Image (cartoon, rainbow, N blue to C red; front, side, top):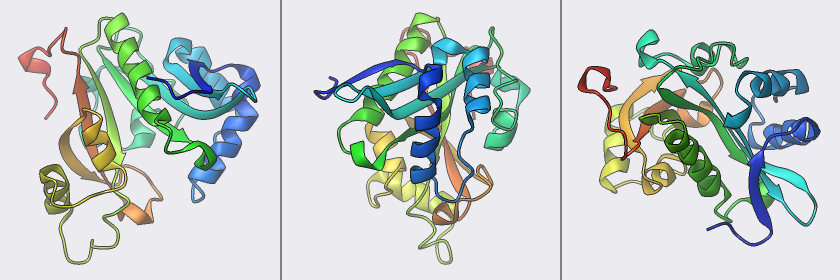
Length: 217
């Protein structure tokens, strides 16, 4: 269910500047997306670039960017830069059987309204619509940095999965139906809150289960 006052739609050129502003607020340690980069995303895979719009103002307040990949061409430990061709989406494969969730974020002024969940539902709808068998992404672990000196990342992730520890991002992904494949180091270049660790996550389309030889491990 969409919260009142919002809708999900595809990204348009008029959104580019606003998306850069949101990115700067959400990821203060990262260089925000430029209009040229967002135009490249839209050119590569227009139906995979989703925006949450605040209808009273008509402004974009959240996004979910995706592309299609053949994950067999990559390694499970590959970084965001590798999987997105350094953020250009030039590696988008129209025949790729996996939808890769490159980024999802919501403006701090519009968080806690269920928009990230609504954006994820839109991407899962695309998985079903295009007959893909899964969606893959990576979850930051912003709670891990505080305990990284005393707890291995794999143990931290196991505790979050078991419900014995809460992570601000991974716990939300688990609640939203994602499953963890494995933790990896170096997924993002600058993520001190996560001690540069992330968890590879996936959602399998229940109408199209994966062939055993393609299962992500």
